[in-house]
Amino acid sequence: MRGGSDGVGGLHFSTVITLTVLRPHHSSMQMSQRGALCSMVLVCLCVVQSMVLVCLCVVQSMVLVCLCVVLSVVLVCLCVVQSMVLVCLCVVQSMVLVWLP
Image (cartoon, rainbow, N blue to C red; front, top):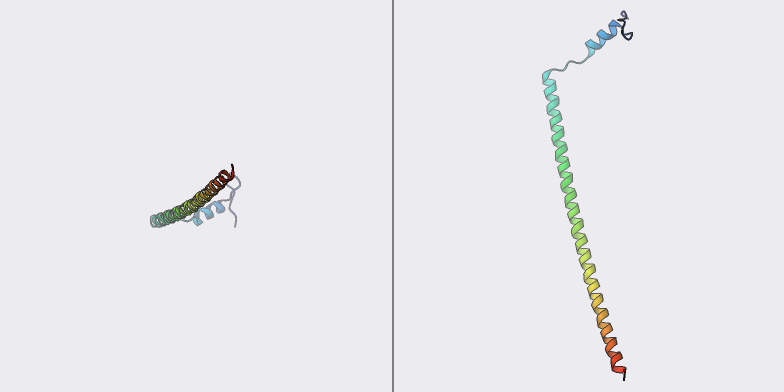
């Protein structure tokens, strides 16, 4: 069933009335429930974000510790190799000096 046109944009009175009647009216209790729900969602998101940040910090710390251990082992190995090379060079030098007249 159609109503008459109101002259603005070709809307019919029945359409305007139907939209006005069907539009939900929110009570203050519904609004407070929505506010509480939004607050709970925000708190949960903050907790999740904090947990993710803590996990990332722990992982970062573990990676840094592992890198430090690996670098320390590599440095110790290099020092040992360097010492062995120096000892070998000293032995070779001593032998050459002994054989020279």
